[in-house]
Amino acid sequence: ELSMKHDRSLHRIDDEKNLIKNKQIEINLLNEEIQQIQDENKKLENIILQYQPHLNLLAQVNLQEYCRMR
Image 1 (tube, rainbow, N blue to C red):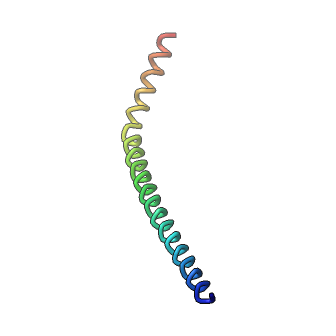
Image 2 (spheres, rainbow, N blue to C red; image 1 turned 30 degrees about the vertical axis):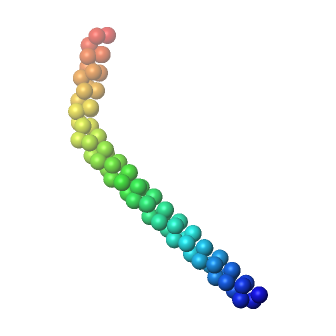
Image 3 (tube, helix red, strand yellow; image 1 turned 180 degrees about the horizontal axis):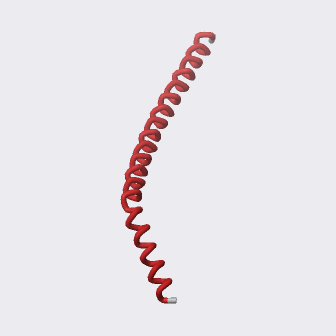
């Protein structure tokens, strides 16, 4: 009976190890996903920075038009 308890204990430990390993894989995949999203955000930020001067100029022109109409 002691041997059976020992076997069950070992089996439980193996199950826990597998669970931990699977969680680690899941964490790694999520980290990769986060990294891809951060990379995409960086690209979008760069695009916004690239167009910001144009947007500012457009806003000024619109404001001037608005003031001229009043």
